[in-house]
Amino acid sequence: MSAQSMNRNRRQPAPAGAVSAREAVARLRERPQAAVLVIGGGINGIATFRDLALQGVDVVLVERGDFVSGASSASSHMIHGGIRYLENGEFRLVKESVEERNGLIRIAPHYVKPLETTVPIFSTFSGVLSAPLRFLTHKSGKPTERGAALIKTGLTIYDAFSRDGGAVPRHRFHGAKRSLAELPALNPGVKYTATYYDASMHDPERLALDVLFDGLAAGPLARAVNYVEAIGHDVAGVRLRDTTTGEEFSVAADVVVNTSGPWTDLTNADLGEETRFMGGTKGSHIVLDHPELLAATAGREIFFEHEDGRIVLIYPLKGRVMVGTTDLEHDMREPAICTEEEVDYFFDLIAHVFPAIRVDRSQIVYRFSGVRPLPRHDDTQPGFVSRDYRIERADASGRPGTSVLSLVGGKWTTFRALAEHLSGEVLALLGGERVVSTKGLAIGGGAGYPATDDARRVWLVSHGDEVGRARAEELLERYGTRAAAYLADIEGEPETPLAHHDGYSRNEIAWLARNERVVRLQDVVLRRTSLAFTGSLTAPLLDELAAVVGAELGWPAGRIAAEVAATASLLAERHGVELGVPAPVE
Image (cartoon, rainbow, N blue to C red; front, top):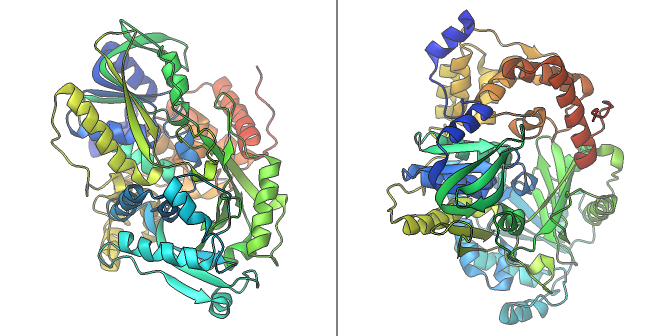
C-alpha cells in the first residue's frame, strides 16, 4: 500500500459504498441468506432497500445492471404533483405527490429545487366537455389540448393541495400581452399563460445513489450488489447470476420484493410465476445545445399537454435544453431507443411553442429513452393510464413459505412514500415493526445542507481551504454535503484537472470509481457524472476517463481499451452520441 493510500485511510473512514462492487458480491456469496431480497435497483427498489435497512431488517438488493440504469435513469428530471391527474379523479395520488414534492425540497435540497413552470394556452374552452367525461367514467375519450378554463380550474384545485402552508406561491394567470412581454419568443397566437411551481431534479441518478448509500450506512445487515441478475427460484432460494463473470449462486429469503419496474412480468417469469401486471409505455427525450432556445425559456420549464394527450416539456437544464416526451407502446424485450420520428415530433412541438426559433439535429447532444412502469391498460390511451401504484402478493411456487411482492406502477415523485408503504407490507409479513420514519429524514448530501446564504458562506469557507471557494461551491452543488467526504479524502493532495474537461478532476473521478460501486466505464460516464447528458464527451476525454477508472479498479490495458470501445458503442446506439471510436472487438 502506498504512503498516500495509508494517509487517506487514516484521515477518512470508508464510506458505506466504499466496498468494491465485486467484493460486495463475494460477501453476499459468503452469507447467501436474508430476510428480504429486493430485485431491481431503480429508485423504488433502492428506496425500499433504504427504508427496510433503517428498520434493522436483514435486506439484500440486487440489480442486473448498474444501479438506477433502467427506467429511473430516463426520467423527465421532474418532481411534480401531477396536475393533470386531477382530471382523472386521482386526488389521492395528487395529494401524495405534492406532499412528497414539498418534502423532497426539504430533505434533498441539493438535488430537488423549486421549478417555475409556465403553460402556454392557445384556446379558452378546449377540453371542457371531454374532461368531465374522463372524470366520471374513467375513460380516456378523445385527447384534446386543454384550454384556459380547464387549466384555471385545475390550478385552483392544485393550489389547495400543494401550497405547503404558503411556502409555494400561488399560480399566476396572464393574458397574451403580459405573456409575450415575459416570454417574447412565444408563439404570438398564445392567448394566455399559466405559471405555477413544481420541482426540478437536476441529477436523478445521483439522488438515487444517495438513497442507496443511506441504506448501506444503516448497518452490516444491509447489502446491495449491481451487475447481478435473478434467473430462477427454487428450494435453495432465488438463483442469481453475476453478469460480469457468469458465476451463479442462490440467496434464500423469507420475502422477495420485485421492484424491476417495466420488467416486472419478465422477472416474475424468471422466478417461475407468469403475471400480466405491466403495460409500460416508452418516453423519449432529446437534449439540445441551443443558446437561443435556452434564453427563450427565461429559466422556466415550458410545460403543457399536446392535443394528442402527451405531456410536452421544454426544460432548461445544466446549460442545455431538454425536450420531451413521448408516450408509446413498447415491447420490454427490446431496448428503448429515441427514434428519428420522435425527434421530428419534438421539433414540431418546439415550432408550435417558439415558431421563430430554428432547431436541427446538429444541435442534439444527447438523446435517451426509457419505459414507464405503468400497469397493463388494455384499450386506455397511454397518456391517460394511472400513474398510481399497487402491490401484488403471491406465494412462491418454487420455495414454499416465501412470499413474493410485486410492485406495479410508481413514479419518481412518490418514491419515499411508496417505499414506506411497500416496506410496511414486508414488515407485516415478517412480524416486525417500524422503528424509523423516513418522512422528514434528510437524504445523503441533503443532511446539513446550508439552507441560507450565510450558512452557505460558512460551509464554503470551512471547506474551501484545500481547493478554493469556487471549487468547493461546485462540489457542494454536485454532491451536497457529501462533498465533505471527498474533500477530506484528498486532504493534502493537489487536485489534478482532467486534461480534456475542466469541470472534473482526476482525483474526483478516481474517488467516484473507488467509493460508488463502479463496475463499467459507462457507470461513470452516464450515471456518476453528467458528462454524457451535457454533450461534454469527446474521444480523448473518454480515453482519459478510462485510464483513471482503470487505474483505480486495476484494469489491464486490454480491459481499458474494451471499456472505451463498449461505452462508445453504447453512446452511439442508445444516445446518438458519435465519438468516432472503433466498435469493440467481439
